[in-house]
Length: 107
Image 1 (tube, rainbow, N blue to C red):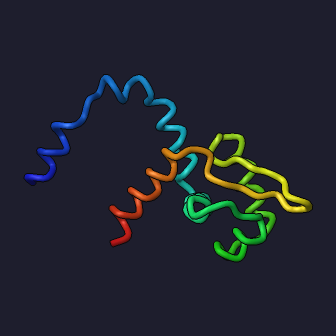
Image 2 (cartoon, one colour):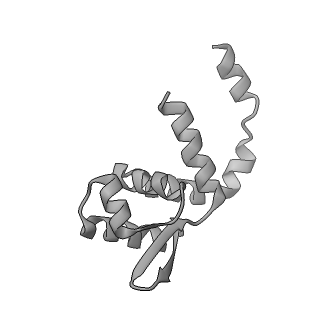
Image 3 (cartoon, rainbow, N blue to C red):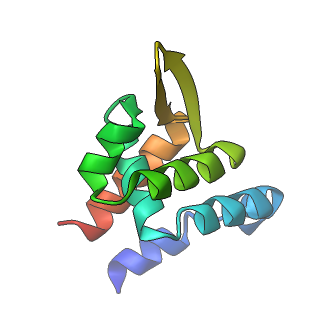
């Protein structure tokens, strides 16, 4: 209970209110387990669709669909190298968020 008191003292509703819609959209975008796993792999560095497919164990079409949506939501950025499209996390805040989630839930 002591740790909750410390957390409560740091919360500022007025600060969150300014960005509440953006944060809500971000959390909704990460609410699918496969999309969260894809982003987790992308914070380790740029990856192609086939690399992500192997790491996540989902079909190439699913990976492509997830990445397309994540790109529209500004979660990932892409670059083309030859025939391959490579994806990476779009924002360092996403890296911090995923690492924080990992530290809280994956002990």
